[in-house]
Image 1 (cartoon, rainbow, N blue to C red):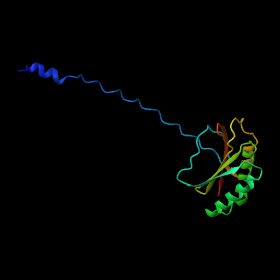
Image 2 (image 1 turned 180 degrees about the vertical axis):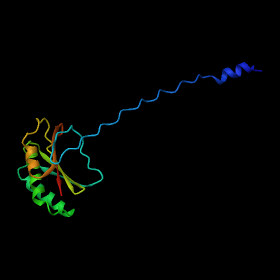
Image 3 (image 1 turned 135 degrees about the horizontal axis):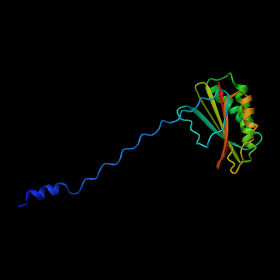
Image 4 (image 1 turned 90 degrees about the vertical axis):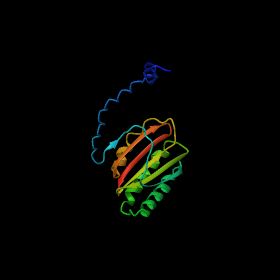
Length: 167
């Protein structure tokens, strides 16, 4: 017959481990300062995400005539979405974006268009790796054409240029 002492020792086996320490509270995330309208942005390389909004994209040949096709497609798509008052501004911005990407010398150019809250986002990727930093005169020219904001970055998959245009 087991003794009462043996029963108490059996209930403590295996010994209980202490709970892990609590995670210390993290400091609050910094809130980005709002940028005035028409600012030029240079950001770190992030993937393009156009979730929860309408969007289309096209792959174009990297050739001098690609800008004309891109211009027609963007204007036609904006008309399909009900925006008819910015034809010239949208055409001018996408022409400059595509011509800049074509100048990088890749075999193809990707054009992405999305709209949200009466703004259009145009993104062009050159698909030419090993590029130096973008020409400093491109972003001011995009801003002069009426872009609310614009930016560029260069990564392993090529140069990416983008512009936001009020519709």
